[in-house]
View 1 (cartoon, one colour):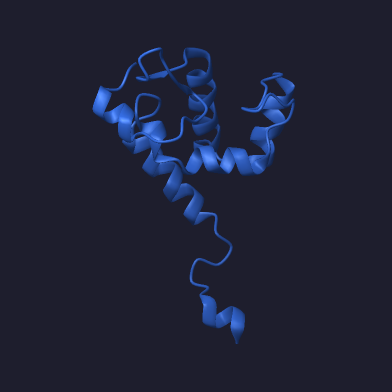
View 2 (tube, rainbow, N blue to C red):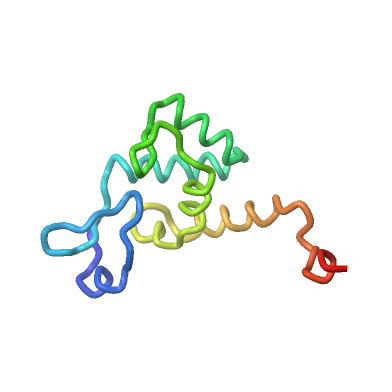
Length: 117
């Protein structure tokens, strides 16, 4: 899938699963797209970041910088990035992951006053 010229100009930094072609148009990278979709699916089925890390390590899927192990930070950033709705996952999947992640918060009613008090 390719974005339009305008979409490509405003896309910003290219993330895992995307690349710019010779005309600087953003397009998806099929192999990385499958991995990104799998990460979202694993999250939606209740897997923690640690379980997703281990799954990718066992499958020998290199992280975006080429390391053997994906960091929790990289996985979290991928799952929080709305850009993945541009041809990799649908909007409903993104929203479902966001909702699931917020429901895992240890104390969703906790606020700054509780910490400072």
